Length: 130
Image (cartoon, rainbow, N blue to C red; front, top):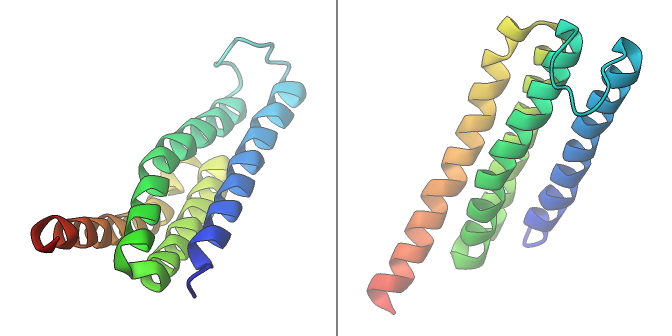
């Protein structure tokens, strides 16, 4: 389980690639030329999925690795898998219908919050106890 955060990181990179591919595909399908970020609603949903996932990843990966490096490797990996499942659910739901993204978002948020709590406990423990 100590290598689970590394697997989660690789899967996160694949998720980011998947959202990149979805935007590229939508650009071609709907004739949206770069640098435009608006047009067909299906393209706009794909673009928002990519941007929202990128924004979430910037908060998620540091907390995952802080939690993993400060005493919670296995649990951080499990929380990371929960984040991934939530983000994939979020992305697939949002691509179909923007209003249906909520449950996936909440699952992902739960996974991220767990890594944040573990990171705070781990870093705080080292800061207080040396």
